[in-house]
Image 1 (cartoon, rainbow over the protein chains, first blue to last red):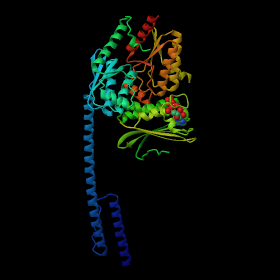
Image 2 (tube, each protein chain N blue to C red):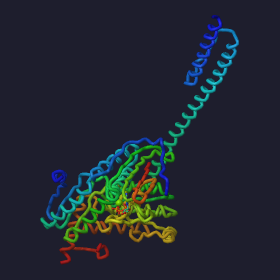
Image 3 (tube, each protein chain N blue to C red):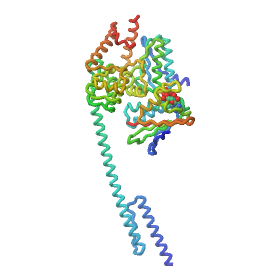
Length: 229
Length: 141
Length: 130
Ligand SMILES: Nc1ncnc2c1ncn2[C@@H]1O[C@H](COP(=O)(O)OP(=O)(O)OP(=O)(O)O)[C@@H](O)[C@H]1O
Ligand SMILES: [Mg+2]
């Protein structure tokens, strides 16, 4: 009788051990066996409790570390965002588009042109054209030391897009070095109007302006050079 | 044949069958909406919408219609919009030719495929004769 | 089918010698083709010398609509009418260029007023030549 009772007790305790282990596995850091009896089995139970202590300690430690790393990461990402924003702001500042006189916009570009900066410049210029209704714009690259294929293509794209909007874009200030590079790279700029200096470009723009003024006044003046067909 | 990039973590936004011209109009409007939701600028919104319009029209013209899958997820650490257009049409015989500017087998201008490729950040195409064509494009800001 | 197309018909207005068309909807292909023939018929009927197509609210022009617009210009030219595309958005222009459609030979204007001036200049030039 006493024998079966004992076996029954031991079975219950083993079941309890299994339950505790299952709880721990499921993420309960507090579950322990905490046996109160003193016999052969209680040694094992105490050892298991100790093991669980170690394990949960380590788990808690690891979670803490992971959270710290995640916090740091999101802080870095936040900082990176600010830096990107500042870069974008700076780019916008460094390519100011201004309306110099009636119907004419000038965009002086200074410094090295990379692909991203050229892209932002292009967008700014096109927006400004639509906003002001100016039909002539001058992109002056006197202050640009070099031009690579990608940048030249962006410039070309700017001029073509401006034409689709209904505006003419002239590129001025092409230095001998840039002219050489452009030809060496095999870039065809023949479809766009280029002028050596900003002054030349302005004189051209003024002529164009006068031309359309004259049409408005219905005078019969036409410059043979400017006839499109 | 190239393997399409895919990722089980991408979240499916929507899926449509393309059977009529109206489907093309509806889907491209949804694409613009999704691009906006991903905080893309107006130019990138226009780029992805236009690229999708080209692919859908090809599917409609040459592939006897098909299916478009709209997903979002990470691609090379970018938050991307991923569009997959698949059809069970005749497939493309010569991919290199089809991808070149100005080539058309019909009466188009032949700028759809190469143009769409220029408008997106990643362009993948898989096609098998008599089986169909899959084009997957990805765009991020 | 017919009624549906009719509903979405894009209105063409005549002012003086010119036709004015303002595209307000995202066009599907059939609508675009229909607009093309509608404009040509109107040119014939009214003897208009110029057409202004305002696309300032169009958010997207793909190769199909691009082709329709440039085809429109060539066809009208044969009928002795000039077409000016007015008000294209910057994002649309950049996208078109990247797509590869530079639309050579298509006249463009920033706004209606500038487009009108262009057409008037053209007609004045022609009269001067005679
Ligand atoms: N989904 C497709 N199934 C079968 N063939 C296709 C498919 N998409 C494209 N093609 C083939 O590839 C060619 C090139 O396609 P692309 O879109 O570049 O030009 P297009 O459709 O002919 O003209 P555009 O797009 O300029 O109107 C097509 O003419 C067609 O033969
Ligand atoms: Mg196509």
